[in-house]
Figure (spheres, helix red, strand yellow):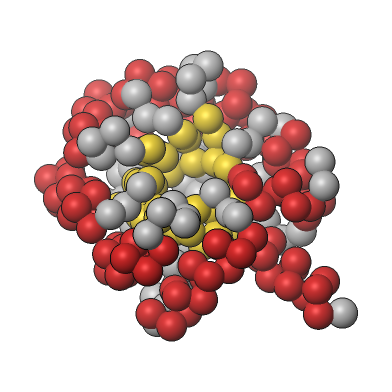
Length: 219
């Protein structure tokens, strides 16, 4: 796989609290130029970004981000608002505390409710692997599969650690055949990106790959 092919797997991401519309607009322009899978942006910018890109680029946004401890009705409302504003894909954060308490049915119910609110759009479920035991990760693979989400996602990028090769291998091994894996957080090189893809990731959440390409062009 050459570097250009990698862009098609990238959710070009900007989720920092300080993000301005000018920065989001630039992110969208980069996404269009490099043919990324999507741009992943804060919900507040979804409507404006969708109007800006039209059908040239998919818009992804985040729900219950970054901590996941919003109530389910709030997450469902956020999702409906994002879809109404034009979001093509939704990345939601589970309630990590629920996982720690073993409340698997509650987590599955929440994912199902959010999936319904997506109205057919792609749903990615962020489980924040750095905060979980291996047993909890495996159980969440089963939950995400049963709930009908399209993706399980490693990380928000806002916790103690991002994606690891080991976690991607583990998730790929334990999710159902119809569920894909998104690696996110800390992907800092084309070599890392290629390895994540070779291990079974289908999407990469990162802002660095496009920046690396731009640096190479400017040399």
